[in-house]
Amino acid sequence: MYLSKLFLPILKENPAEAKIKSHQLMLRVGMIKQSSSGIYSWLPLGLRIMKKIENIVREEQNNIGAQELLMPTIQSADIWKESGRYDDYGEEMLRIKDRQNREMLYGPTNEELITEIFRASIKSYKSLPQSLYHIQWKFRDELRPRFGVMRCREFLMKDAYTFDLSDEDAVKSYNKMYFAYLKTFKRMGLTAIPMAADTGPIGGNLSHEFVILAETGESKIYADKRIFEIDTRNFNLDDSSLEKMRNEFETYYAVTDDKFNKEDFDKKVLQENRLITKGIEVGHIFYFGDKYSKPLNASVDLQGGKKISVKMGSYGIGVSRLVAAIIEAKFNNNIMKWPLSVSPYEVAIIPMISKNDNSNLIKSQKIYKELIKHNIDVLLDDTDENISAKIKKFNLIGIPYQIIIGQKSEGNIFEFKEIDKESQNLSIDKVVQKLTKEKSLI
Image 1: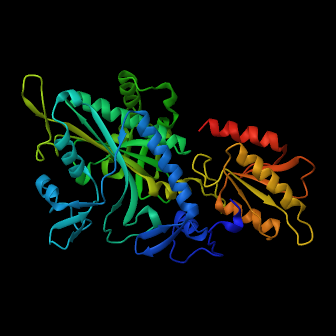
Image 2 (image 1 turned 90 degrees about the vertical axis):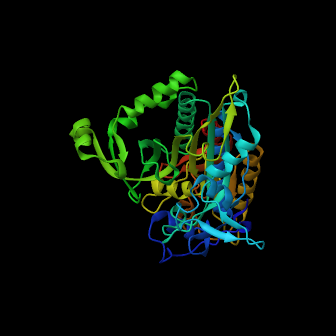
Image 3 (image 1 turned 180 degrees about the vertical axis):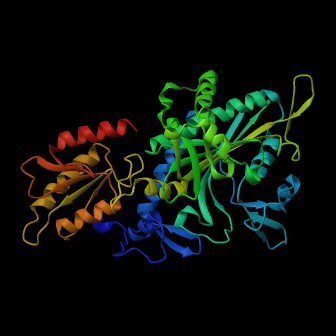
């Protein structure tokens, strides 16, 4: 993509209404545009990042055997009344009526709908276990939407649901998701810590939030620092390995403020290992047994003819929220650096162009074609801005690698720079080798 062709409405200053780093940056570099309170249009740059996050989430769900489907945004109120949650959910649920005066709602979550799909389709224990997920827009009518896409009203989420015969089997499914979440966030350059959490309106008796450290986080967290030293590469999808992994994480104290107990914290964590800070929730998993399957009659026939209500779990990742969360974790001293796995482009070519000499632009175009040939996602700045303004702009946008065509370029050697590191003089072949290797590690 050439920068002159990219729809990128950059603002000169941070918008006054934006109070946190992610909201400021997303508005300023033209990633999003507010449509109404808590509702945003995703512009090309922001959408590219969100789609890359979505693809990582999808790949890791597929890797544990979850199957993708797509449920609608609008649901019938009938199944929510059947589960007993229609009146209990509160004013965050947007309730509407269609032209036949049927009660409908814009789905804030999907436990009822997925259970209705399951009960209409699966009748025998032989079809279990099942793991289904979708990536879809949700709406919750927040009283005070704030912080941009961190707490907005319309947002993109991955929701997964598991169906098992027994509590024991269901916990195995829970552990698979636990593992998939750790891998998902790691691929995005994030260290997300699983923390015991309340189940809230979803219900159940087993729940973990996945939280990344960030000063602007809404959750206060209390943890044993040693939890960050656990190496998840030692674990695999074998049931015993997954159980060992979860046990290892749960050896260390790590909770959000709604689960905090000072006496437990003081007793279990030595002073030198204590971490008290803020974090951002990027994922939440629940096991709630037959909370939904019983009232909705989602049962299967056992071998002897007896019926049993299936055991269910629910697992969410805020896909659109992750765009902001990554910014909060990575933005530093007015410089953004996207992890390569989710960056809108992998490398930016920044030539010094003058009105009387377009030789650097011609060189840039040759490099551009070579990178495209090797499947490297590249953005070429073909505008006539001065070089210092260009570099400042790209430091703000956050594309992790830059090829600068200017005074340090000579022949087939160019200035190659990773944001926040010293520049190197490399040939285009060496640049291709480096980027190809980095991409292979994602």
